Length: 111
Image (cartoon, rainbow, N blue to C red; front, side):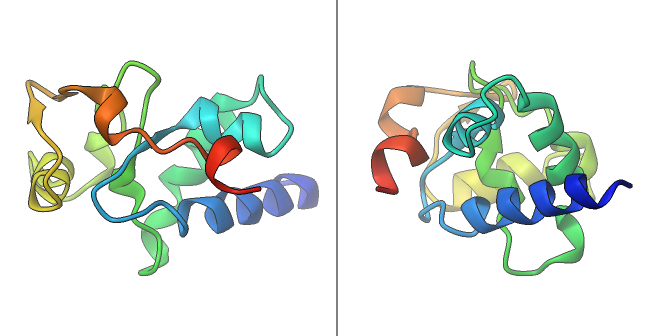
């Protein structure tokens, strides 16, 4: 991994640590906040490695439509959904319901 990617990953993790309990954000929203609007996929790669950090709630990062696209990185078949539901987020068929109700936009919340 290139050093600049590692720096980007650390910046992603800093934002992910700030996602409030019961809220979710998207890969793209994090990328936009970091000034790299076209790097949503790289945010996803960073989140793939977030499991080694206990203080990052990676289950709170979903795709722009509210789909739990990262669920295969969690142990167990429905762990990502179970974690979100335990925080009060409604999920049906790997899809967050009423996404706008739970969505946390770092560009608006972190000034």
